[in-house]
Amino acid sequence: NTGMLTDPVARYNYTANTKATFFAHNIQAKAVQHVDPHGEVVSTGVLGRLADTLSKNGYKLGLCSVSERIAFSLQGEGTRSPPIRYVKGNGILPFNIRPTSNDMFVTMNNLNNE
Image (cartoon, rainbow, N blue to C red; front, side, top):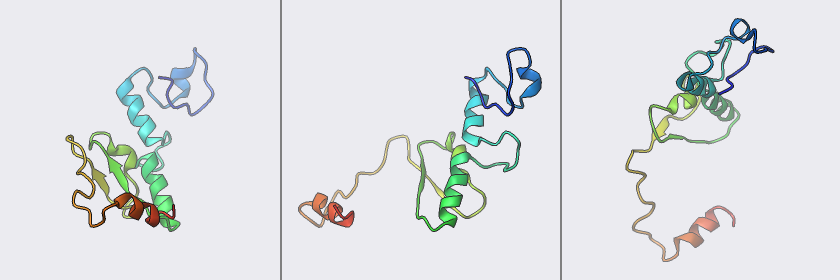
């Protein structure tokens, strides 16, 4: 792990010139999910802030995580983005188990202009 550097550093001065903690996987994992070394947007993640910006600019999106433990990166500011949906450990529900069409792939392709 190299970590998130906030200033140019060398081997002899990295502890004095950085705010990040190196050499601990759990701390680096959280830092990468957060990407806010100066503490400007506390309790948000980089993907959540990106989703906030996209939502603010009219994009429709959804946020999904396979674990509540690692969903920190999806946390945005307030109510700009849709809520995070969690996929359970046993997977997602099968899609369209009782189709109303004999060939659902044709229907899906038509929806997507293909």
